[in-house]
Structure formats: C-alpha cells, structure tokens
Image (cartoon, rainbow, N blue to C red; front, side):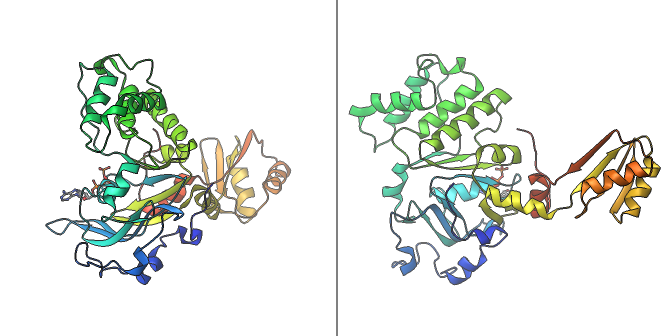
Length: 356
Ligand SMILES: Nc1ncnc2c1ncn2[C@@H]1O[C@H](COP(=O)(O)OP(=O)(O)OP(=O)(O)O)[C@@H](O)[C@H]1O
C-alpha cells in the first residue's frame, strides 16, 4: 500500500498544509506567476493534491470549504460523504469543469488549471454518465465517443476501442446493442469510454449509483482490476461498505469540509478507541447483570435473553468465570469490537448507508 505523506493528518487534520500555503492569495486567474511551491515535479508521490480548495456558489452557498486533499499515486482513494457534502463539486473543480473560488490544486504533479491540456489526456473521468445511443452497439458507441475527442488520432481508434472494451470485459458483447446491455454492462461501457487511451488516473463520481447488486459487484471488481494495473483511482461514494471493499485510502467529507483522510488501515486502528461491548446470552439476565455491575463494567443493561455492558480493559475470560461462579447459565458470549462505521459516524456526525 502506498504511503500517504502526513499519515498523522488522518483526523481533520490537513489544516497545517493550508495555513502554510498560499490560501486566499491564489484566487485563480488573478496571479500570473504561480507561487514557487506550485511548481512541482512530475514525480510527485500524489496523483492529486489540493490546498484550500473552495467553491462558493452564487447566492453564498459554500459547497466545498478549504479542502486539503492528498491522493497518493497507486491508491484507490474513496471520497466518502453523504449526499450534498460536496463530492461532485470537488470532482468538477479537479477536472476544470467548475472554477474554484479559492485555493490551488495539482494533478499528476502539475499545477492546475494551467496544466489542463497536458494532464487531462492522462486522466479518465466519469462524472455525468456519457449519453449512449440505445440502438448502436457498445463498440459503435465508443467509436462515436472517441471521434468526438479532438486529441484522439482516428488512425488508432480501433485499437484504442478494442483495448478499452477488453479492459472492462466487454469484448464478447462489443457488437450487442447498448439497449440490450445490463445495468452493469452499461456502466462498464461508460468506464471504457473513460479509458480510451492510457490513463494514469481515473476519476469516478458515484459509479455504482443506481446499479443493481450484480452491476455494483461488476463495477467494484473492475475498479480493483484497473487499480491492480497501476492506475490511481479516485472514486466518490456515499456508501461506506463500498469504500471499505474497494479502497486503500479514504477521505471523509462533511458539509463541504474534509474531516479526515488517510489509509483505511488507519481508520480501522482508530476504531479501537471506541468502546468494546460484551454481550451475554442467558436466561438469567438479572444474575448476569449483577455480575457485570459487580465487576465494575459501565453501561450495564438487560434485554430479551441477554445482558450487555462495556467491557473496557477487562478480560472476557474473567467475565465468563464470574458468570459461572454466580450460577448464570451462559448460552453465548460475544465481544463486539467497534466497526469502521462507528468511526465514520463519529467523524461525520451522521450515519452512512452501509449496504451497496
Ligand atoms: N451549481 C450549483 N449552484 C448552487 N449550489 C450548488 C450547485 N451545485 C451544487 N450545489 C450545492 O452544493 C452542495 C454540494 O453539492 P455536491 O453535488 O457537490 O454534493 P455531493 O456530495 O456530490 O452530493 P450528491 O451525492 O448528492 O451529488 C449541495 O448543497 C448542493 O446543493
């Protein structure tokens, strides 16, 4: 797994980068000479870096507020946040589709938006699904799509299209009409359109939105395959399970702010700070509750055939022994460690849809 600079910035923390930087001074288009720290090299360890990136829409709505993202090369970076938290606006800014109100950003080591002509051909993007013709085949649709790109050499179109179809596993269905494609195949074709040409970075905005479970699985598997080939993938989602299954890194958005970012392992480690619960399944709930209370455990409560408490640092075998000594018939005993979801809920103050 690639290392993210400043892993310690996992929690809400990317502020220092912003304060040290040219925030505010760099209203885009206002400064003809970019600050020295913007002149980065192609070999930068991040595929995307933003500093203080902000979008205030007319009418005062702040959609994205001082974003300091660092997306390591080679990562599958899950850009996670509830609906309306600013993910799409961020992606549109990164791709030069919307002008930031404030802040700077780099893609593939080059300062944007100045380097757009050099950088965007190396970046595949799926933001709004491309409109495909239902009565044309997948291949014919890609041909039209490719022909609309002035940078694409028509002499090599067939090869490009063949490779893109192969990459998304649609070679066998290339001649089928688009309208006969399943939802998953349609989305894979959209990803193929983003992969017409060799890409170092793929940006996908909610690629599984609206898909059935089978389509969702296909797209997730495809993202992993693309990443395994060395392409950095920046993928937005409001689904925690999706990010957990696909991503090596996560950035968490809440109302336009990045509240945390880092390797997913770091988030898992964070979850160890949450309360570990012990759940005793027993017909003798009162006896069990008395034992748990006697052991000094907090949050003791009884329910339907069970007694529950916060285990804290106590060894579960100690609880088991005391329960047996007290004569409680123990049918089951479970230690519940906090999930990644608990951590995200604490960070964002709201729940996530867990299912894909
Ligand atoms: N063109 C616009 N003009 C005014 N406000 C906008 C515009 N585009 C987005 N917004 C607002 O900015 C906020 C962030 O929207 P954005 O679409 O970036 O969020 P999101 O996290 O991608 O959510 P979703 O998953 O629902 O698309 C929302 O409150 C939205 O209403």
